[in-house]
Image (cartoon, rainbow, N blue to C red; front, side, top):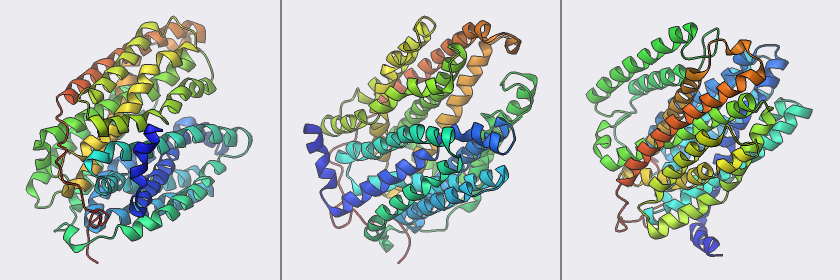
Length: 500
């Protein structure tokens, strides 16, 4: 009852309720558009009579569009109103899902999937800015936890419902299910859209840096593509084909990053205001965010390999292993947000990262000697740490810059999220293949299992060191001062920029 009482003030006014309902519904929709959709790849490959590697573009193009456009979406929110751009993203995502469902070729599916990623980028780039302006720092831990619980619900329901659709009905129903969810999110966002009206005083002067945005999109695209096996031959970072693809892509990313930084230093109204990174607590919180999402994608990359290759079990067991983590993720974020807001414990964020690191360390030590049902038990520290860290770190990032820079903070929060995902998947897979023998494809499944478990153990140790670094950085982050002025009731809901 204490937790319920602590959450009740967040819904104390129609404006607050409108914001939380709209953002939570959007999180459910966007989360369904990401992880659970990957379940449909084999069905799409069979339906269009192609390989799973071709169908995998469904995931790649979505991540590419979302990761590349999320900061631009946030900056457009600064200029034209965060609620307006957020609402446009919901419309685009919902409309694109319907077009995917009625597509007649894989090319059409992939194309509309890219449009869906663009819509998700507009939503996620502005959601944090809306929450940060509607709630003062003393309430943001709780406010950020509610949409995160919605996202976990989206993952759980997607894993269950989409699996049924794919097994017994049609892959098209996976995407058609986005229509009622999208309509619900749109309807719930209308009151927020009416309330969060942009004002002239919020307007950001100058035009949007579209050239910088194009360079940023190209740079982010090179980074994301460098972590995917788009080359022929063995899916490896160290094979001959892999080296010919991944090394040039990494070089292209470094080159584009240098060009982007030089350009941004020379323009008057850059899309990335480099001066903000001089705020050490903002930069530290972003580094911790990269470390956290590094571990998240490492988990989603390594656990399926451990279950399917290390234990020789089917994909359904991956869902079983991950299920306890998702269930905890629907409870613990609320408690974490409440504790963060009330006590501001210094050790909460670093402690959460140490818990995740400890979980990976336990997995590295014992994964080769426990039965499959023991893996979810070994993952309990990871589940607890991830559920605690996410909402409070989001609140920390958004509180590390002045409120007028909420759009940039929101965009960078989501951009570093995607950077962490890209690096996590790449490093985890690279460490795995370092242990696997060159001729593993010639071995039987039983003979190959010990090598996959060894690869999992090495990858887990690399994740442990990365998380400990992120935890150390989080430890030295100074919490926000409670004297930070909160927006007044009359002003706190006029979110965005632009001229009426």
